[in-house]
Every structure is written in structure tokens, then in C-alpha cells.
Image (cartoon, rainbow, N blue to C red):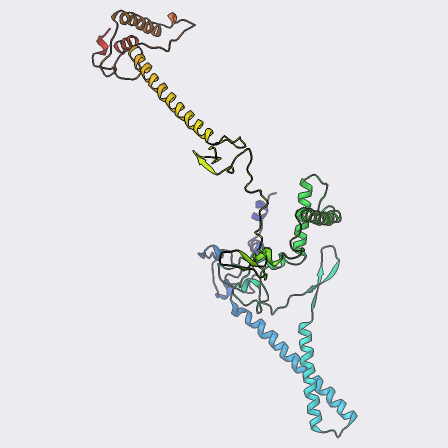
Length: 447
């Protein structure tokens, strides 16, 4: 029998009972059918148009006034507790005064009462500052205590700055890395962002240890920070020791090679400033009468050293972007000095070279003008003084016709083709005569 058949066989009273039982809301003691009060449809659908933030707001629709009765109840409980503690203290004080001295002064009683009231206030503060414990029960039945270390007076980090463009707060991890109040006096604020803790203390050392383990693993070392943390830390310590040794070794090598200017003795004043307190007296001609003339400092390079019979040093003469000797005007370094005769010979050789170059250019111009009459230049216009041989022109026209036929019929094309780069004026004229001009309107009637 199906569920539908079972439901159809129930009576009307049983059907109402089934509907009431399956209802998810708490049923009324007396229904609106009999009381005629608070009559409402069975399904009430509210349509509220909210934006993106409103749909995801945990406190949407919450009325803060509904929490007022909770605050009133706790305040009433605190007042009752204070009154009860004060009454108990007064009773104890009265009993103590009766037993010790019935005739004690009223002033002593008042002082004692003030002291007792101060003790009550201190005990209240101690109770407030006391760390609360709450019992946690897991699914397996084991219990344990959890300390609640949060001070309720501290402002939550996401309430320090309500500006949307301020430091981002991640509610999932409860982290705010940047400083929410960067312009505030650092002596007054107690929270400067989670990055302050991430880059201080042992967090930075742990980060460097992780980076060293990753780099060592990439280079082939069998090390893993999570699998063998002791091994990774030992390798990192050895790495830092070896690094310091290598630094000190490099430093010692550099000091050994170049010396240490900081540890050496200071240079004398004569070398630093070029002056001293020695007295030197000169006459009107500039000769020294009294004292010793200061010696000029010489460089480590040799100066005024003449080699190979030269009377000037290398670099004393410049010509055509080249250095040379001024005494003989030679451009070859470490050459032997030839003096004035060498200068005259060089000038004569230069003049002879210029004459030879001019003569060669003149002869090339004559040859080129003679060849221009025999050979034609591709892509140039027909000169006015062109002289053509008619027999050669007829032969060139036959060759051009033969070449054009071979181009049209590929079967007549030869395998080994020899080209002649020398083109005569007759060949060029034959090419011009047989050339088809595409812009000629009569080109289709030529053949």
C-alpha cells in the first residue's frame, strides 16, 4: 500500500493531526479558527529588495532594542549581588564588634565599614579580571577546559576604522595585515596590523628557514621542513656558519691584496696638502738663498724619455686622427727617427701618390667613355649620339625573336643555358624594338 493510499484512508481528524505534526512552526494553543484573532494566510512570503552587502549581512533585520531586557536583567543581578555582599559584610562587622568590644566608638565602625567596602570593590574587580573557564565536551565523551583569554573591553580590530578604503579585514581568518590607523600616534595605539608580528621576532627567522629549505631541495638536497624540521634547522645553521667563514675569507683576501687604508698610519701633511712649515728664502731673480726647495712629486710613469734617436715623445704630433712623433712626423710607434730627411721623403711620397691617383682617375674616365659607345646600360634612355651597326642590329633582332619563342614554348628551352653579361647597344636596341608596351592601345594588332 502506497503513502497516498494510506493518507486517503485516514479520517478528517487524523488528516488534521498529520498536517499539524508535519508543520515546522510552533502550533498555537487555540487556533485562529476558534478565536477569530490573528488570522493570517498559511504561507506568508516576504519580498525584500536588498543589495549585495545587505544579502550577506549577518545582522540584517536585528533590532538592538530587543537586547535591552538582557542588559536590564544582568544589571539587576549585579545590583542584587552588591547589596547582598554589603549586607553580609555589615553582619560580620557587627558580630565582630560585639564580641571584641561592645563599647567601641562609632568612628572606628565607620572606618572599618569603609575598609570593608573597599575590599568588596577589590574582590569585584578581581572576579571580573579572573580568567573564565568553560567546559568543552567532544563527541567521544572526553571533556576539557578552554580558557577564554579575550578581554571584552578591547575594541575589535575591524571596528578601529570603519572607512571602506582603510585596511582590509578578512573575516574568515580574522586577519588585518595593514595598519588601520596609520596617522595615529604610535605611543597611543595598541594595534598596528598583523604585519608587525609577521616581520618581527622569530617569525622572520622561521620564514628564512623555510626559504632555505625550499632552495636546498631544488638544488638536490633531501630536506623537508615539515617531514624533518630538526634536519632542516641543522642544515640552516651549518649554512650560516659556512657563509660567515666565506665572507671573512674573502675579506682577508682583499685586505691582503690591496691593504687596509683604515688601519694604516695617516699620510704626512706634506703629501696630503702639498705644504709644510719649512722656511725657504728667495732673491729677486728667484734663486734660493736660504732653505731647501720643495721637491715636486713625480708620477709613477716615465716622463721625457726619448727612444730611437727621437727628440720628441710619442703623441706630440696629430694628423688625420692618428698620433705620431713631431720630430720626424712618423705615425708608426717605436720607429727610428729619420729627422728632416724623413719629413721631406714623406712629403715627396705623398705628392707622388696624389699624382698617380689623379692620372689613374683620368685614364679610367677615357676608358669608360670608349666603352659607353659599344655597351649599353640597362634601364637608361637612348642617348642622342648613339651609332648602331645595321648588320649587328639585324643579328640581334634574330636572337631576340629566338629567345621569345623559347620563352613561349618550354619544350624548346635548353637545359644548359649560358648567359652573357656584356650587352651591346645593338642588343639593347633589339630588346627595345621587340618589347611589348602594355599601355599601347595597338599592342594586340602587332602580331
